[in-house]
Length: 382
Image 1 (cartoon, rainbow, N blue to C red):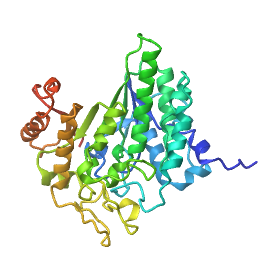
Image 2: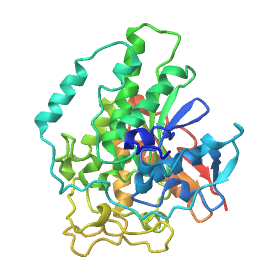
Image 3: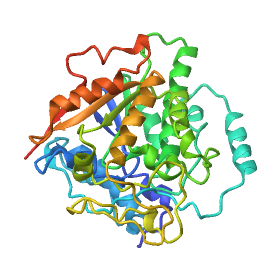
């Protein structure tokens, strides 16, 4: 007998969208990116645990392949006969780079209905995690849905007592999807507050870390969806997103600067960006713009010729990352600057620039500047 067609949510519920490394939970929000994905920068020989690759594939399939709704896909790990975890090569990344995940020409939902939904959610102030985790959910149009991601994170927090950190990471750029990022951060924040209220001293507060390429200032509407009340933002107000992150409990950032040379950055990372945050693309921009493929050698953004916003001038992407790092550091966030230890990278200049960017930290937040190395160098795999 043929199985009945499953709803998108039920069909996707069999898939895992989180993975665990040590005592940390990792959540990939999207498979799409506005530069060469960070795992790709680690080199052709870079390998990951098989369970990590399973999760990344799940996110890629559900976000980009319509067949998942008809049961065409399932969690690869569910069919294994053993629980062994082994290293496998990072899957080839063949998705075009984008500037945004959203079409801002769509009709925007009324603020009144959004406010009413938020009010109804907040009226349930039960002490169990099932009520806590749904307070801040406001869906966007992307899969996996925010609700599914929050459900899986909340399940980890409830059952895994050894978890000490939640980390937003993956092959895509998480700041392209700010609504989901903030919803998960607020879920962790609510969980921490609940632990304090219940006076459970035996469990430490869960830390929250964001791993990013730092290009969030170049994303139209700063990565907020149509449904977000902060959607109308001007470039001069773009560090408002940092305030939102801090308010949601995000205090730690890991930013991939990768080089001190702004033009070398364009070659290495191929940023698919427009100048400044808060820009709105036209209907003629496909998939949010940015048609550059991560597997090509073209280092320029293939923007739509009809777009009123030209691609950024060479070197501007690197400038925006430096500005983002300094803004976050000034606000007291714990910023870790990372790079890939490639032979052509001038590590001395990279360390010098990183020390300069972090020197704007408040006096009580000078910890990283005083270290011998202020850059976390990740190995490159030939």
